[in-house]
Length: 453
Ligand SMILES: Cc1cc2nc3c(=O)[nH]c(=O)nc-3n(C[C@H](O)[C@H](O)[C@H](O)COP(=O)(O)OP(=O)(O)OC[C@H]3O[C@@H](n4cnc5c(N)ncnc54)[C@H](O)[C@@H]3O)c2cc1C
Image (tube, rainbow, N blue to C red; front, side):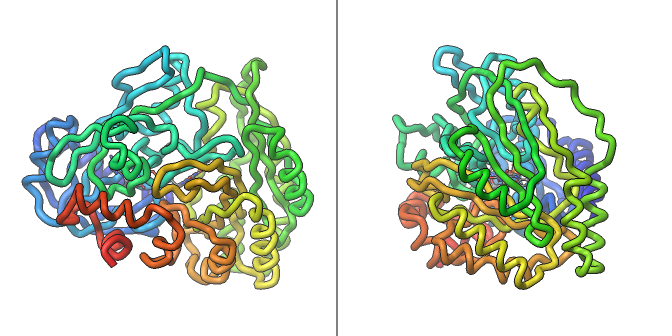
């Protein structure tokens, strides 16, 4: 399925939901269209999909349905967090800013708000998120539930900037939590995979609004690794995308600036079309991979641009892929990356998409992969028309060797035992999950496998 087909399915889904009155605020129940995530790698046929438009709509839905109830945000997770044959609830209709505190630089949003609209809304009130991910199509709740992050040695994942949450539990109870109120639930809920209840409101700690200058340079991959290593404290945000077979890298830095905004560039070539073409060529003719990767510099030029933070953070990812990402101890990040690159070269893996290398600061959210560990995030991607299993099967043991913790929203093959070993608070999370949802209504088969094994 192509990206546009996936998008049009979703649009059709939302249009039909609207026709059925799903956004009208009354409790709705209907046979759902098949659901799929952004990449098309996860699909399900749920019994019903609900679109509450207020908190008052949610408890009646919970009481009227039986069996598993999963919440979906933007559907941008690669891992099987959402699929269920029971019910799905989307807070798409509960979006926007609810309140803000100009003195403490905090703002409260409906949990269904996409980052793409939350971030400019913050700028309009003189605030800004500390950091953002590669894309901004995630809902705020979806992003925090999986510890979504950007890059920067001093910048932690989005969940760590949350100060208050409102949850509606599987019993229909409304609970507000923060470090002052039910701290244990709050520590669990900041990264909670939709397993504790439906998050309806999120308050984030922010900073004054700011502008960013993005610099993109194409380099030799080996040179890029040492450049990034030696400049990692010079730039607030630094990362590279590496093409191991062609030995090329796209290095990106972001720094705060007062410079004037640059005009929005009119692209001379459609980079996404070229990416699709190259990936599809490698899929059919793997021997072209090295040559095509060497050509990256012809298609991506060195550039700079300046604008408000919300405009500079996100990239357009129009060619679907599937992704595996692990978060590794920062001091071992480059060694692990070298090993991944060497393996991709030695095995001549037919992956055209680049690997991505980023920095993330430690935090204290129980299920955060960055829990008390300054980290490097390394991700590998496979074109959506190609089976990702062969490449990911070869690469995943390298992440394990470095005590990597997987990104919750991305593909991995770990089970309950490994999560218990990797996350000091995994048992604590399960204890809270059983307290809040003793019947496990919020768990699908993947999460039951992790939490009830
Ligand atoms: C193209 C692309 C680029 C990406 N770039 C990055 C990146 O740069 N950095 C990064 O860290 N990740 C990245 N991701 C991963 C992505 O940020 C996460 O998977 C994120 O969780 C997706 O948010 P979503 O709103 O789509 O949530 P979904 O995928 O829909 O859901 C994620 C989880 O949140 C739960 N959830 C959603 N809403 C609620 C709610 N209201 N209450 C309770 N639980 C809820 C769901 O049940 C599920 O467990 C990327 C993904 C894609 C497809």
